[in-house]
Image 1 (cartoon, rainbow, N blue to C red):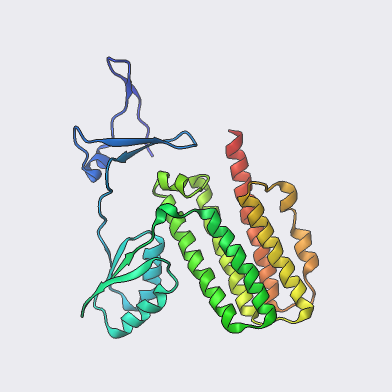
Image 2: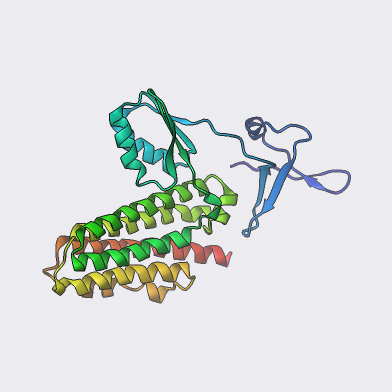
Length: 292
């Protein structure tokens, strides 16, 4: 970040100069049209007028890290990815991992390369509805674990992974684009790390429920209660009604657990406490921001 002094011109208008590296990168010249937008936080954003420059595709050439690399490029917001030296085995692995990445599809392929393209309309994405979607899936997963429908439980966990990766992609893009940050309904750049941890904790909760697979009626009540606490905390936060009293749930979580509860249920209870901690950070950060 750098600071620049405003200069007054003859007409009384205040001006600032544009940083040369930014001008060169975006090929701004004398007479170029720029768009100015003020955010709800009072920030002034300067953007190129017209379509954004087309980004060069990312190239993946390490077969041992193929799955991790595809997921990473997706989360980092890449629009096009080219997999070099493709083989039938790499194609099969690519098809498998794409099931977990909403909007990422094979756009074209030949004997040597596979080109992936993101078809998401990200302008219609909002973070809070996706958090609510994760809550719905956690509730559904708890019901499936109690009924013992393992196939449906696995499918539910698969959907949790898809929504998780989509949330992380939105958050990563919001760190780079102030307009998208506001558009996606994210309070501030400083809140993004806490949101990233929050969605990771929610994904962990889904993993814990999937690991439980089946649960006895003795512990089913505890499972529903813990999931209920998680869902209530998240939904109360996204509705803007979270307060210190609602965050005081540690003793409630502790009272739910039976000594003979399975390890997976203890992990879920610990995850609920972690989710509470992330929401505490978000709550305190947003409260401080509102007081300024």
